[in-house]
Length: 116
Image (cartoon, rainbow, N blue to C red; front, side):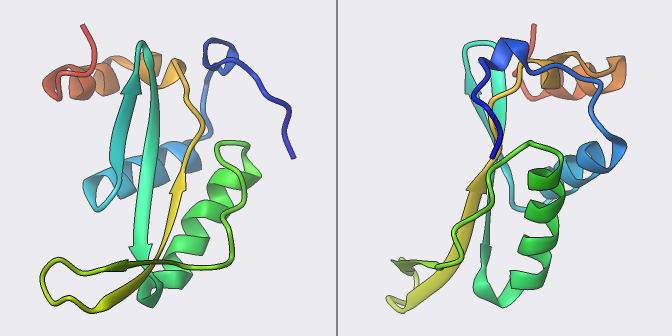
């Protein structure tokens, strides 16, 4: 859908709705993945939360932050109950500009040990 660009060429400013959804998911279940000076966000949800998952990924994909997720759920066995768990997963593309958004965000990244 979108051409491939090196993460160093993906720059801000980022739309406010994308920033809000990224921060909101990071406060919940999402995770940072760091590669050199670039960051991406990984996000997983049980299929019980499909409406929320697809709302977030719709925002991200419409703004070019991720590809459209696979409609088929993933399956894994719960380490606690041994039951099968159906879930969905998506990762944003890598961005270097996530580290350069604002002084407040830089302070958050520094507190997490992600930026110098």
